[in-house]
Image (cartoon, rainbow, N blue to C red; front, side, top):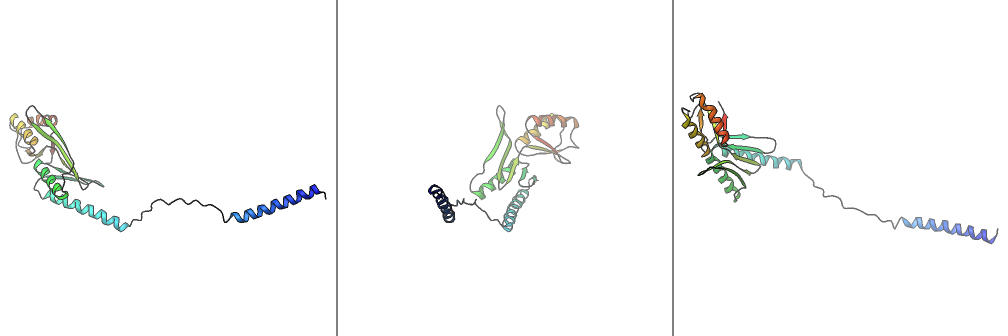
Length: 198
């Protein structure tokens, strides 16, 4: 073998040995990048059940308070939130005072007024307390007892009573049938709801 061949063979042997040593030492010097894990929250189904039961108990207490006022209240309970619809303005203000007393601060309230030349009437008011929406809108309830419409001045009186927050009941059977349609038209014009419960 010539000296050039011997140099090539010795170069290849040295190259192979150096690769073996580099491979053997590279295991110790490997670089691992460990990314932090996302925040893990462990939740107990018992704690979730207890918190849901607390919310339901608080809402039942609010319903009981609303119903114990002696005013007519409509309660709607969808899946998560509920609505207590109060018929009279006095009952709405009483519920607002109760929520203010319990929290120590007045809840955010949404109000819509109907302004006339000389008067201002509240036609919508609402506030939310503990996932319960308390809602007031002036309404006239058609029932089997209450006021009877005899002439057009009675229509105006009933609408004014509703706008003043009294929530009058109207006797449908004893009222003049010709006055019911003007009542409904005027009540729609002034933002008063007419509800039939008979």
